[in-house]
Amino acid sequence: MKRILGRITAMVAAGMLCMPAWVWAAGEKATNIVVVADTRRVTGVMKYFSNLYNTNVVLFAVWAVVLTVVIGCTLGFLMDFIMERTGLDLKSRKIIEH
Image (cartoon, rainbow, N blue to C red):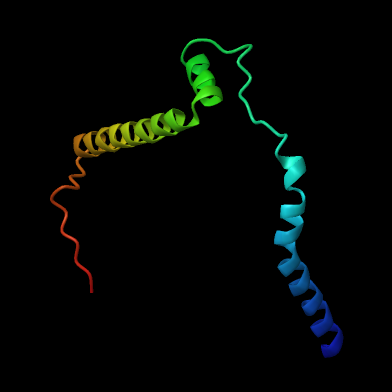
């Protein structure tokens, strides 16, 4: 049983080592694939971001980072305000670790 399990493990390891070569071999087929956003039925801000994704991916990434930071800060301050209004003041909390 140990011998069979060792051979199976060796085959799996050999397959994993050959996998990057298989991926490189499929590279020619993968170059023809283009990922685009469908803008036929969207309007407004969604149309702007869809067109931005299709034309300038770097600016789209910058927008994604900026909007993530803005939404995160807004939600953080809003939750801090709500917690303070309910009586939980987290600013004066003392952390005691044992």
